[in-house]
Image (cartoon, rainbow, N blue to C red; front, side, top):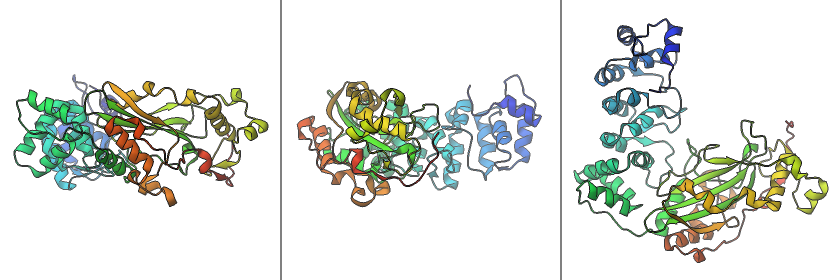
Length: 437
């Protein structure tokens, strides 16, 4: 049983007895929880460890629900300790917290009550009503159903059946969620419901450009959370220094599933041991994935050697690499940046390999590539975008026609528009002097 806390270390530090279960002793856990009525940053490990050391889920719910959660956080990413320890029977505690916080849950561990979201997703199908109540900050889902979509992705058929039954029972929120989400992959949903003996109607079956653009527009209008929702051609931090962008669109060979993968070459440091190395960052959209991408997680390293590329002044001039000009104004290592720019010209295929090698990230079964392009009219969205780039994908002829091509399974419908994905469109002389590593 893997928990966010090493209970034996906490017990040793706090002079608490550990029993044969490897948990705090029952007597000491109950004593702690009988005296500590407020969960704070200072007592967090002791209180949480005591809650995880009780005899049953029922006892956990009693003590946890009575606490004042003054410090609204638990340790680690994706904390679901209570479900790991006791199972889905901890749901009543989560429902109590949802009442107190009016359904608003943080999208990353640094935001209040993020652990309510992660626990709800872990609970499973019995949490359907609570999942529908919870609202995640910065939700990039086109119907603001990101938490429901993540819950469905994790629990699949059983969760779809629970949602359908909630919708059939008269819950307007369940019906709205079911109708919106089922449209994204109706055949799969219908298969799950049929297996459960339900006759809930699912449709329409045809993927439309409007649904694709709705997904992309929602991401491009969303705030940053645990996932970066949409890529920008003009970032501001050096480790996001922009170099190139590629889009790959795919459809399931015979079915509803679809996906859009955006790959962005970014960064100013080729040393893979640094905190923020140069990478190919991925952004995912479609019927099988959550919108956006996690920084450094949904990514692959740039395996380049600046010394081997040997970019001198003559080569920089020949290839128009523009030393001293950057997108971010915050480049730290110019040798590495020029090496990346040179590699995109001399060995582009090593950075952007065959599309078939990277589309598995979209999780589309039997995926067929519809379009691949690295030269097109991109927009930065309404949150990060400035000037002419402050627009939604639906306003770009490139994104509109990519959506049309994807819906029709006909790549010839794509029109690149006024291509702006070459980094040279966005650089300016860098005046900020940064120390080299």
